Image (cartoon, rainbow, N blue to C red; front, side, top):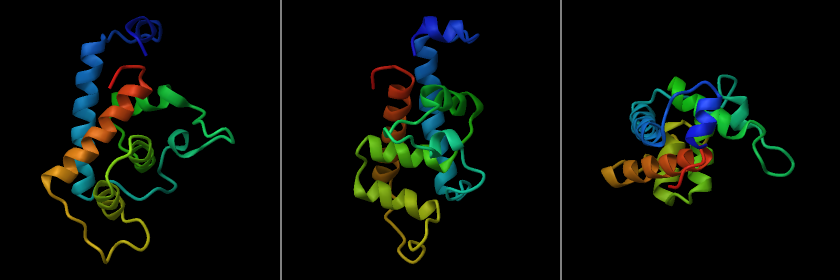
Length: 136
């Protein structure tokens, strides 16, 4: 999404401001994740992030992602989409699944070092940048 599109939607944010907002969103998302404050996908999840059309597209697209960034709304499906789309490491995927308390992983505590956290942050950041029409 470029600056003109943001302005048209009533937002006065330039690319640099949006990038900074995405950076903060990704870092805080992972902090919340590792603190156990994000639930597994379920009824409180975002339907726009969760739903997939027959074509593989997400019907609400970038508007949904931008809304999460602006509202600081941390939903599990957004993270799972980001990890898949950006090819995050198996360690990052396992750590995310563990901290989201996905079925079957409670007994296998993952490595949760700085590198794993950084991998999750980078995947989420790249995904959000791309969804907002910016280069990662």
